Image (cartoon, rainbow, N blue to C red; front, side, top):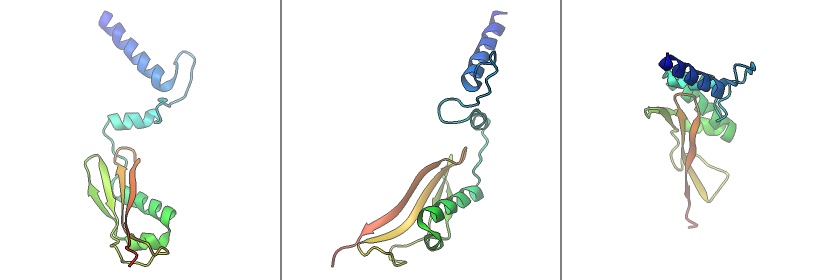
Length: 134
């Protein structure tokens, strides 16, 4: 009987933490730490929301909204590499491939890292070189 009581108490504490008090009928699903309870359940179950196709599509949206459609076309094809718990998306732009509005900087490929579990953007960075003044 004591073991069952402790398990029930542990379940109630977890429920209270993630969902609010069941006694007062609160319906908040937030864990209070930036992620929703439903995402915590999916993560615990090992569900991965970001497939290769989802990760590439998200990377394309980010690139287009941040740098424009022209830069997206220069970076294509985007290559997705499996990084275990994340997708590593790399652009295909080479240094000097396209003119930029800056004479002092040469831009290269973009890298976007996306978590498989919940599609969080873990990294969004681009290569750049400063040109010599010669």
